[in-house]
Length: 176
Image (tube, rainbow, N blue to C red; front, side, top):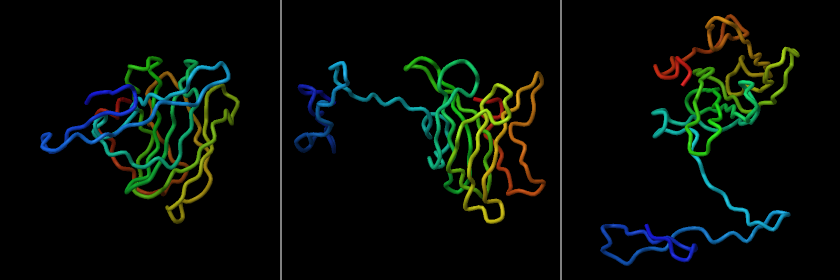
């Protein structure tokens, strides 16, 4: 790929048997209040090529400091075949890898809305969220963050009877 004057890239398809096809985005003409131009640099947080797992949809997404280190982490929920909730620890470096921590993967349930709040006033971030597409398990829920000195189950459902939990890949059982 060759960059020409910052406007287009030339891509050879089919072994360059034909002329290159111009693709790409134009230069930014948007500017901030200080006069500097605004552009966007994509950094991958998760996907099949990073974690080996298909992304299960991005129905719910919120940024907040989950681990108490002062930076913004990402909490996400979704649903494609499996309801899934997890969070990604911010590496504090644009070149660093975001560490994924699975919270729950269920057969039924679309986790699609989250509000970050310290609901129990214990100093950590909790979430209030909604769950849909799960029949009798639909509703509004409080996801309380619990911290302790000993390892504990990652997710403890509120109901004794819930949709089936799916096992996490081996690398996610340890949190990353």
